[in-house]
Length: 202
Image (cartoon, rainbow, N blue to C red):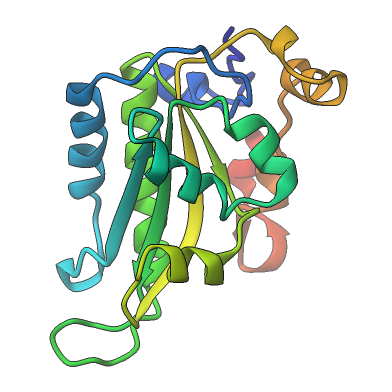
């Protein structure tokens, strides 16, 4: 299943195809494709080239590690994410390695790395669903995360499956039209809240 974005203006097809399903096929993700995703994340931009991100990978082939990762998710997400062949816990390093100062850009930079990963997944025929619904403290404890590293999201990864495999509520979400705010709601000029003329023209 695909849900191609209906955009206000043309964008790259890869971006139109990226979306966040909850239904996954019972197929493992090939190791070479996993490596490709992390290589894409590796080349994201970051402040001072600090690259303040790290990823903990758990695949269903490694049952203990996978169960530990499932255990940090909230119940709602655990219900559907347990079908994903791979789960990835994403971290931001909140201090600069060179001098220990707080890095206020770390979350932004991790976001860029995760976006690279998600788009590379789309290019390889995979899908990702990024989740905020997890217990960060449990993640720190279960995986012995050092100080200064902030657990930010968990990414479910795999091949998109049949929406009919989901509960009725989730199936409705899976098949509902995609929605986004219009450009004039967030592209401003001159003053906050004043839509930029170029956004209005879209």
